[in-house]
Length: 221
Image (cartoon, rainbow, N blue to C red; front, side, top):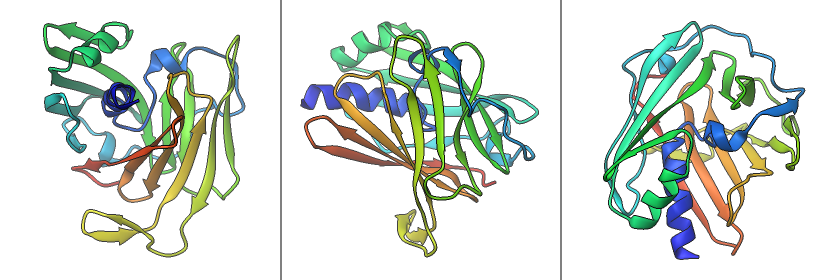
């Protein structure tokens, strides 16, 4: 299972905004959560903003940067040097990845506003990750033909500063994602803050283990 954890770790790392890559989200057959969220564009989605994630074994020179912005829609470009052969093999099979020797790169599109964050499916639909005014129990569902529904559910909304991040405690909205088409992974939990955006991801594996990663954006909302 250790090798599977490394493989999934690199996939999650490349999807730094906590999102599964567009090719794995897939084209849905319809969803109640694929309407664009409102709000204004924020500095997190501005061209030039960069993100930092913890070190992942078998990788170096990781880079995550916003390279395009059109209104509230931003393109985040990622790259890394990957020395683990298993990770390179996985990257070669990902539609959103480009592999040149040990260099892996790609880009992903997100809608980032003062109201929340959405990823995009492979057929271009926005799919809600979080709404900052969400309540515990709110659910975002993506219907998929021939696959289980991809479900993102709000499982916690802080009333106190109960999440340790960046040498301080902050409030979070925690969104749990199930229906993931990645072998070995049972679910992913995303941690959002209305000011700092995505601040962490917790990957839960089928063997009962888990891996928490922090995410830091240079810009705030």
